[in-house]
Image 1 (cartoon, rainbow, N blue to C red):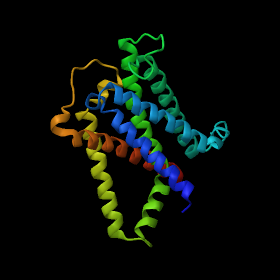
Image 2: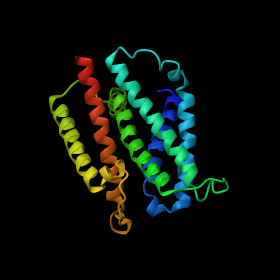
Image 3: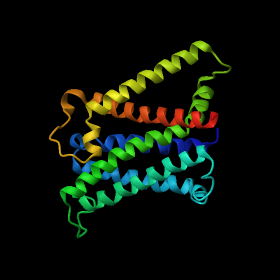
Image 4: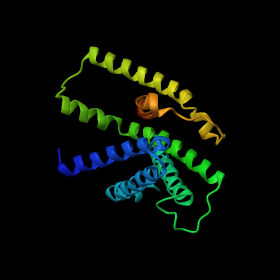
Length: 221
């Protein structure tokens, strides 16, 4: 496996980890939240440079259902990330506080909306690369051939992740965030920090499974 590929995989994994960390802004504090967001934005730029050839293919392949779905998910992720970056600059109280911009409750709500849309889109984007991820895991684990027992265990694990992801959507009240409803609920990080991150990881896993299954169904059709 080429070192450059491993380096890119490390940067992408780091970006996902920083996204999850940034969602815990009430725990980290505003300054740390903004610094993490800045690093995440820089990693997004690096990711775009590594995948610059993709931008030249945006206008192609829309008649093929599988590629159309993949492009739609990727473009949605790109647009939500840009929205997240723009609103983060507007509401900044530390990194970009020197800019003559006025933060409003609406801009903060849009920022929260974009953050959770990015979370969902990242999961769906990971699902597009499901076959590659499965191939890497099989190679690292030294797995060869097929096994009915292993297939059953993996499907059972996927079902558990999906169920916990659906449960997490309700626990974290993601619906209210997506509809920009004002809530006064705050996560108690003093008693359940791990649960906070597990819920978000489960949501990413749920979206990844949905997009992976959607692409497989389209491919078979």
